[in-house]
Image (cartoon, rainbow, N blue to C red; front, side, top):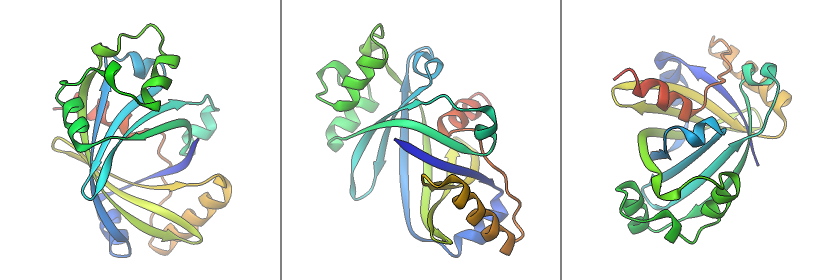
Length: 200
């Protein structure tokens, strides 16, 4: 289960906070779908590649929550992950490996959630690149992201936690020190990818 708060930032605010962050990593995130069948079902299928780490295949499925919580930037999703080899990751991105041949918990859950979906119809629908670094926010660990889709960029702070109210107060207090307004972000990275891809 993934539980996190997301807050939007401007480029200037990101640069201000980035001076305090550490352990930067660059991630390449490729998303898969077919005619938005996963998207309409509240799910997202992602392949994440990062230098020095094994690629990770992730399936996320939204859990229904109130509109108020979403507007507060609170995201709750079921999540299944499986590491794959760089060779398998490359083949998946290029559509050269049948999904049905992949022995993976992610594929098993995908079949359970979408029993009528032909796995071989899944195609890469876009790539989102992220520079992620760690930022201490009170007693919480924040993840500071600069994301790029084509020529479009956006910035956000994520805090993965079960203590949503305490984390929200910590972020608000932290932002006040830098005169940064609190902008809860309801949009997921997959949602941003789909929206920004249409602007190309």
